[in-house]
Image (cartoon, rainbow, N blue to C red):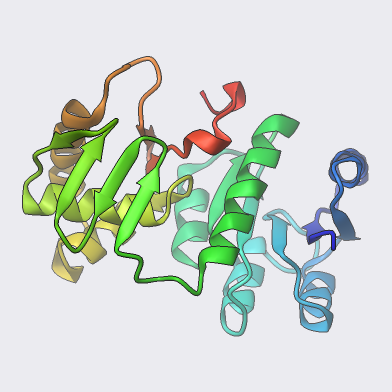
Length: 235
């Protein structure tokens, strides 16, 4: 059965192009042009993924995102037109799973949707003890990390950071979310501390600087690249 995607977009030309491309790849698409219509559609039949434009005519997209999160765990990919980091961070902190900035390419959008669908299917398996992202393997119970079979020695906080990112591979996590979950709520503004640990982690994991595993989303946070969904549009 085709996955049903809810596209919330008031720009008709963008909506038509995106809808046609997704239908051509086998998805079922429902198009709405306002925040109120999006909430009604999501309540009527839960979609597999919501692609949510933040610039809507009736309700701010951030408010739609927050409202959806009060009763639904559906993956939400927000779309921003201005590229402002503050809007991206707010959306992610308010419950969005990912973001994409206009103009975007279809390969990039399709990759983000695939990641969101995988997260939805894996949502019931929160406490996996072995995580695999490409040739990166994390045995949580044994506190052991290998890359292409070679063991990597990590400090406890490096291990905690990598495990968090691996549980959400392909998804961007904000500085605030990472700091709260790895170092605790009192550390949520210590982004420089996080940068140091991210740099140390990269040094131990990277074998090809041109294709990093741990990607910085400037002004927003970090993403552990899922090789199954890597496209040139992401680079």
